Amino acid sequence: MSKYLILIYQDEAVARQAEGESVSASYQEFQRRRGSCLIGGAALHPSSTATSIRRDGSGGFAVTDGPFAESKETLGGYYLIEAADLDEALEIAKEVPAGVGVEVWPVRVAS
Amino acid sequence: MAGAGGQLMPGAARTEVAAAVADAHRREWAFVLAATVRVAGDIDAAEETVQDAYASALSTWGRSGIPTNPGAWLTVTARRRALDVRRRTATAERALPKLVSPGERGVDEAVVEGAGPEGEDIPDDRLRLIFTCCHPALALEAQVALTLRLLCGLSTAEVARAFLVPETTMAARLTRAKKKIAAAHIPYRVPGASELHERVDGVLAVVYLVYTTGHTAPSGADLMRGDLAGRGLELARMLRALLPEDPDVAGLLALILLTGARTGARLDGQGDLVLLENQDRSMWDRQAIEEGVRLLGASLAARPPGRFALMAAIAAVHDESGSWADTDWHEILGLYDLLLATWPSPVVRLNRAIALGFALGPAEALGELDALGAEPQLARYPYLAAARGDFLARLGRAAEARLAFEEALILTDNQAERRFLRSRISEPPESRGLPGQGESPS
Image: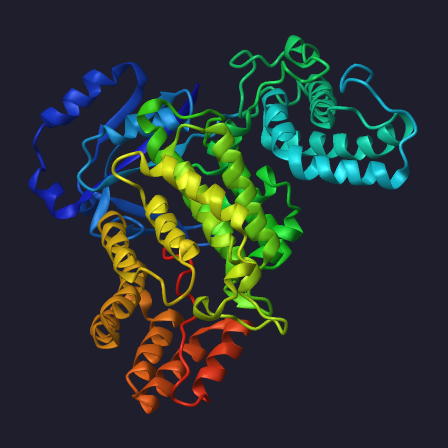
């Protein structure tokens, strides 16, 4: 079995509207159906609440408001899943009721 | 290796051995590699052991003769070697991700040693390898490169030449793709029934791209890179053998046969382009046409017909008409209408416009072609300007025609096509013809 990180992207405007609401029924339904594959996951606050920290190259940090890349589509949440292979991971990922879409990243195993 | 490849003929001559190894490379590479991946656990390791097996065939076959079943000999040799390597590195590699996990598929000695002398126990894993190479999670250019490298056995340098990129670029592309297969665990498996259709479509697109790249090379001195077109045909035949019930596979093989049947007539003695209109039809490969038409029938039995079957049907109308004048353009136009409904691409609209011109008249075609001028996907497509030039010339609008051919000339890098366009620019008003017409209408 391999681990994959599913990054859930959504429209920022939609995300702001939904702020403060509990996990929607469609996500609850997804989690119930795929519970056995889910290792972890969470919904995130809107990107306006995110903070980026970049190394300034001389031992310090530059702290800025917002995510690294500003975009209409922002990270809204994630799941950490376990699947037999990429095909199974993609099957699971397609069922995530994401507003825009998802990215599926294989997780490196420490050796 | 006694027993691995059946009866051995001792004392084979050196050239004979080299020819047998080269033949086995072309015919059996995919089979040997696919069967070895299972044992080696990943593609890179399998490639290495298969290459070693071919190298040792050169010396061993020279000593003890060419085996009656070279593929089985090579497979057993490569799989034994892969198993050795795997045992030796088992501890070191325990933590690394593997394409095929131990225990998941019979990766054990029984599988390797159980291969009979005629190879009847060796599983045909080629379909698995095909679906791994053509996985949609890989970029299309990586799918094509992997297919040529792993299924056709082309060297990295050969794949690089075929796609006109530096060898280092192609090597990096292949390495990146293989790393993704290992890291993301792209499975070594034939997809289940629910996704099979979609996945076969992806594989066919790759094979068709290999074929068309060879059929009309986008640039370069020769109109055709015949070897690549030949590889495309071989891949389509391999798929047909592995998926005999699939109508889309039959459609693609039919298309390649029916288009390729005219290859011998496409260039004249000087290497110049001969238009379909002017080709010597007695030079067309009748056997290929017969086989293509038979396959087309099998493909069309499926409803509704797919993209490749419709393209093959169009090619068949050309192949089966006795002369350019006898061409049934109304039937071709009808087939393009069906194709446009299945595959609404600007290039199909362009080819439909050309068929319209021959069915109804140049003015009708020009109307359609002018409308296509706004299509961004055709902005750098030389055949649009060439088609406009031809229909303008047929209407006697020579000055406008010349401008259109000059535009097409700017957009094409293929030397044979450039010579043709230059001849159209300087021609007297009554000559006519179109490059690309009757070719692959994708």
